[in-house]
Length: 86
Image 1 (cartoon, helix red, strand yellow):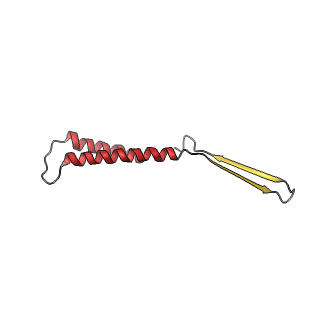
Image 2: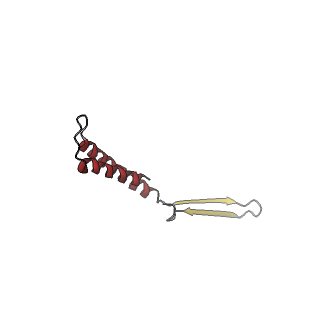
Image 3: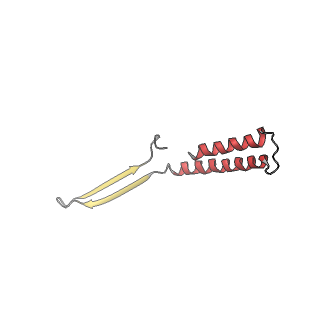
């Protein structure tokens, strides 16, 4: 969602900065467009970084003693997000 928001902010900023030819006395639309484009770029970068961090694998290992037999039981779980979870 953050990458989509970044693209929307960047597109609106580009429209304000380059496509509109409207003069408003109380606000500089080109500057607002540049600010929105910068904010969109930052949001896109943050979204990519967070998506890359989410792809780490997790491994858990636990060893217990079975009270009935007295044997050690080792349980290992590994989880990594699949392609549907990204």
